[in-house]
Length: 316
Ligand code: ZN
Image 1: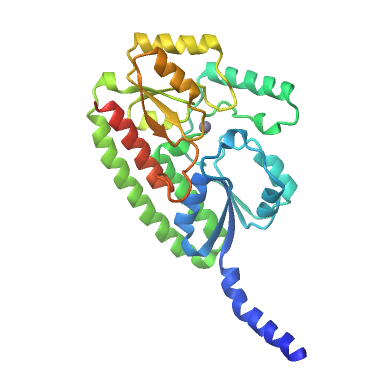
Image 2 (image 1 turned 90 degrees about the horizontal axis):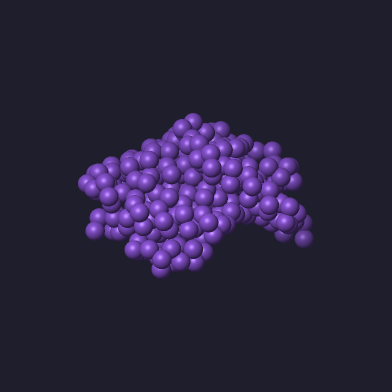
């Protein structure tokens, strides 16, 4: 018996360095999860709270999320008010590790004033109507959180992630720096290729409607006007008057294309299609990846899919 125990002990010691080598990291949503995986490679074990096709705007953390975060050494969040539910989760988990706000250092966009007001009202109504649904009550602080939809911002995200990983695992700092540099080069190449294609669009083919305002940063990067039918978050339903106003705008400005999203119900966009000459040009991945094996299972695939889908509808 004693012999078996000591053998197990030796075995345990022999495998533990391998098991310990992986750095447990929690990323708040699927896009960040992929970025951490790209930078961390084999050295990290990534847990993602809001998974593929998930909507982080209205997420409600689970008891499992508390345990996951408690066992992590690094927490990577988007910031800019995107994860309104994170502070409570953080407190509940007693997390003692390093926190990285991936968007730190980017130039944030302000929400349109009208949207910010609408947002506050919606959050209020929501909280009054349903006190238990805390996840719907979030604070954007007047900033547009969807900074990842401009690849130039993701260069900053990747640097922040590499710095956080190096802080919790300094032994592999040069590996993280190499992975980050290689990934950023891929991103810059893709961005440059698409910028050249978007530059050729004529002025009247640069406007479109998306489900919610997730593409403000992308629109600025590629010189488009993308209007969200639902506003900046997904927890606010537009009123009948707002929908009517949008339909009038699409008709008068001859906006050619509409896009549905992987995280939103397509009904509103389909209703607008029936009442205007604008046509649905496909599905964009706004705030989440597709499941593994899908068409947007990584951030690079997501970006390429979104830019291709926009161009296919707008280049006509
Ligand atoms: Zn969003």
